[in-house]
Length: 166
Image (cartoon, rainbow, N blue to C red):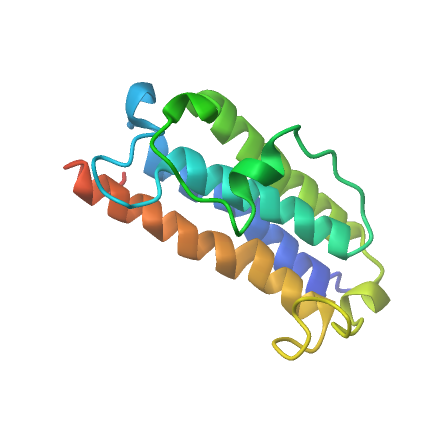
C-alpha cells in the first residue's frame, strides 16, 4: 500500500531545504552573515530567519502550534525590513539551527496532517483568491517561498565575491 500523498509530497522537500541552505552558507564567515555588503540585498541571517518564521506561520494556518521567539515576528514577518544592524540578528550557527529545526518541525507536522486539513479551503485567509486549498498554501509557504529566498542568498554570495555554492 502506497503512503504517497500530498503531505509526504510536501514534507520530504521541506526537510531537504536545510541541506540546500547549508550548501549556500557553510563557507560564509560568521561576521558577514548579517551584512548587506553596502547594498539593499537581504543578508543570509534575515533570509533564514524570515523563512523559518513563515514555516511556523504555515503550521499555525494548518492548525498546529508553534513557539515563536520573542522578537521573531518583529525581525522576520513580511513587513520587516532587513537592516544593517547585524547585532539584532541571531549568530550564523543559531540562524542555521533555527531554520533547520523549523523546517523539520513543519515537515513532521505536515506529514501527520489529516488529508482533510490540506484539502481545506483558503476562504477567510490571506491566501483566499490566490490558492484554493491549504495544501496549495503549504506547498508555496514551505517550498516555493523559501526556495525564492534561498536564491537571494545565492545572489548575496555573488555580491560578496564568493561565487557558486558547493
